[in-house]
Length: 394
Image (cartoon, rainbow, N blue to C red):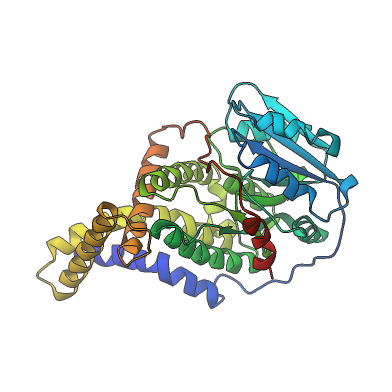
């Protein structure tokens, strides 16, 4: 029990504090220089949509306002069995070169992306969500990294437009900044293996069809890494979205679904987890993903060991801390508030680890993640939201 106690405590501390510190100190490799220069390849902007009438017109105007040469940009919108006005709105932009591919039956995001990419002709694919809004220089900034032949994928920096809406969204915004900082550190060292699903660019030649159970923002960077290319994060490019899941149950469903898909994707690329073959990249995937998804199991082991060793001063202190954490999390769930009070932090911590527990169990038991149905607000983004990426990218 004593060994279980210290091993579990050490692993939890390593994932949340030790790994970020090791990145900062350069223990996972030194910063590398990557060449970027103004280039103008042909690009295909891929936008999957399911019942996006609240966002799709603003999204199209946002893309068309980008300062990339219009004759080099192909815009393809996929409608995944939409039953609202999404397709009618897209058709109004046909004279501006916007293409629509309608899937009468809802197939899911990955299947729809397969169909859209098969019809795309650009050298660079820009995969972006219908509720994601970008600064006018985004396309130029993303593509200039491909002047370096080592680079296979470039991702934007994600940000929430409604970060201060509730305690949940504020803590998600805080977590997103922590996560983005680590991704930036990994990117600088050439060991990044994930992207922001709201907006990223990749070489067309590296694309291969997605399985319905795979998430594009994780499996595609894994494939890029497996092909010996580099994934980069450009901190100048901000992908602004609205977090619709601003209540615990909705956010839990979202996170458990994502973790289930990502866990499955990582298990399907075991060679990337071999530190003897992939070195720092494998160590980073273990530290940033695999061990993090195992945190709920370490927490359960720590709770059991702490209780069994409660006569020991250290174990008793850790036990009391855990019980306090879970009590505050319960208070945060039973007394929701629009302000990000202290109970919201323990609540968010417990929520993400409960999602990891449910997501990994769902994966290993073979349960599917269900059909892709975005949870969107019933209103278009404000002009202030559209302007925000430019200011955030400075």
